[in-house]
Length: 299
Image (cartoon, rainbow, N blue to C red; front, side):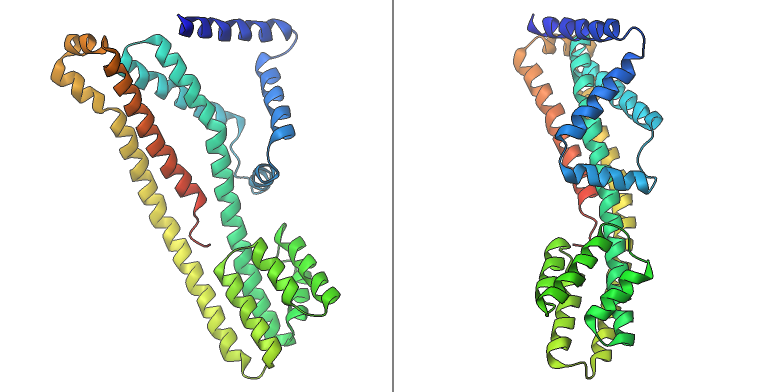
């Protein structure tokens, strides 16, 4: 009873929006409302990663988002009907699945942003070492990288702040601490630690240490890119396996027969168990997707 009321309320709400925007597209009205809400309440980091994904040309287009909505909604509706033979549950699960589209889009943007930052870290560390071989001074090396134009935002602004902090305090300790906290990569911390040691003990015989540091960076980059290829292959297999798990109910229906399965569905605890299967498998999938998009293998 309550479910039917909920569905009717959604339909009434859509009709109200449509009638209120007779002169324009109701889709545009809803999209504008969602966008305004997002801009008002979304965390700053969300805005940053989305903006960077746009800048890099890797954010989904409206057409791609529409395809995702259709695929997620249609897939969830099909699976729910396969489990419960209920249009109501199909509509509910389709709606819930569509709600995950913005979250998955955020995770994708976050992955793009993480990979971009790692590439910038690679450029930062490699070029600082190269500049130091010429200038033999850490801050001068930073200034050389700053003026070379190889770095992009936000790393460029943070490095400018780092240089200013070094000049204000007269030492590189606070500047290094600032950068280490901002970019928690062990390759950054190791390089900074090496430069602190060279600055305090003198630059004599620093070439060999810097060469070793450069080799460590090259090895890290190689391993990270190799890991990305392996993880992409595993991710495809993982998602395929997760989707197949949803279809195990077909095996149950085959063993019991359609009539036997429908009789079984009349028991409340069977329906509860089936909901649990869907929710657990969905959690399994979302957790794997989150891990794939968050961990780029460089931190």
